[in-house]
Amino acid sequence: MIRLGKRRLLSLFMAVCMVFTLLPMNNMRAMADESWTEGLQADEAGTEGYNEGGDEAKTASGPAITMITDGAVEYYDLWVGGIQVTSENKDNITGSGIEKGTVTYDLDNCILTLNGATIKGSKSDEISGTIYKYGIWFWGYLKINLMGSNEIIDESGSNTISYGIYTTHTLTITGSGSLNVSVSTTGSTSLCYGIKGTTGTIIDGGNINVSVQSDGDATGICGDNVTISGGIVTSNATTASSEVDFVNAIYAEKNINISGGTVIATGTKMNGSYPAAYGFGGANVNITGGTVTAKAYGYNGNSDIAAVNAKFTFSNGSVKAGTDSDGSVLNDYDNSKLSKYRYLSYEISPEAASVNEAKRVIEGGIYTMAQEDAGTSESVREGLARHINGLSAMRETGIAVTADDITINYYTSAIAGTSDSPAGKDGSFIFTVSLSNEGGNGNHSIHKRNNHRNSLCRVNG
Image (cartoon, rainbow, N blue to C red; front, side, top):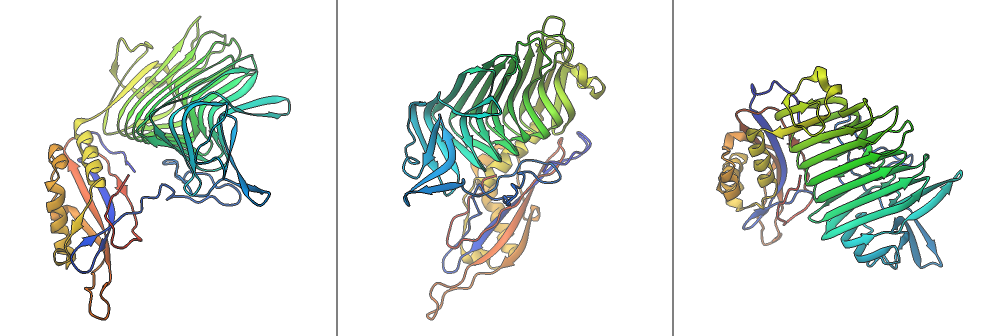
């Protein structure tokens, strides 16, 4: 978690906590728990996917609710392109609403993988005379893994409430692929949303492009919390209505937290006597990393237009802002003028960027240590420092660590094998690496646990 401090007066500090297993015999290996489901668990009442402090959305485990018919087929509470996912089709979900590509569902981990998919169908429900439409609909916590180029298109709504993606709990989007979400509705009672994870939307990878347009309210990406730590995220929300409607490119009831990636959020209100168009909207916006741009456009005399309509805080970088929506004239950020800014941009400092890269390198490393080098916690610290500094990507950051920068907790030595017990017994420990670079501020800790033996360590933040 990034903590705010005086800019440029403190050094940027980050702690990376990992868990290792000390192996008996010839080497020591370890593996941090890589399960994406680590975090809050859903209770019977539907526990919300965020912590009470409101720092960021959390993921939680639990498959979709299932129904069994004829003692054989399970029907999951997951719909893709108007097709309900079942135990029979989950490995190759097809139908008229999925025009091309491959769509699969991993029930055990609640992961939906889109691989070059074009989704144009939708699940439709009628509630009290109102039609609700969903390109993807899921009851629970869902992770979407992107591969190749994907798109979700819904442009047929008239006085509907339409969603590109909707989940009742936290939604996580990741992967190396891209996703274009386009939703448009017409009619004065229409509403449209691009991506909504009700208790939280998390994006940590991929190239996400959301475009929504409505005669009513239009919201690009939303949830109780929206957390972006990586990838490229572009969200455009537009309304042409003259009614009292709101436009938010990215909106969160509690917190928008951005710590990495590239984010561009644009809200546009075409006309209306009571305009309300925002790049970021909600309660709080906190930026600690990445490259971020928020813009808002208003026409025909509109006045209630702002790049950010929320409490705004930032650290580890600088902010420029201006009253012109195109950002033609920018000045240093002045919080007293926040409501007047129609353009706002954040850039992480070089010092903070180098620490973030060092963090990524260490977390992505694989570490193997001979047992004789891990006989004591002190020897473990020295060995880890040598290994980390020896990584070529680490050297490129210009940051080096020493044994004094590494803290060992909960150390248990390994026991070598004997004739009676050839396998021996694994040892374990948790270590924390502290990284610093002059010119930045803040701190960050990542906690992982290890419940594995004889395995490599790969930590994914």
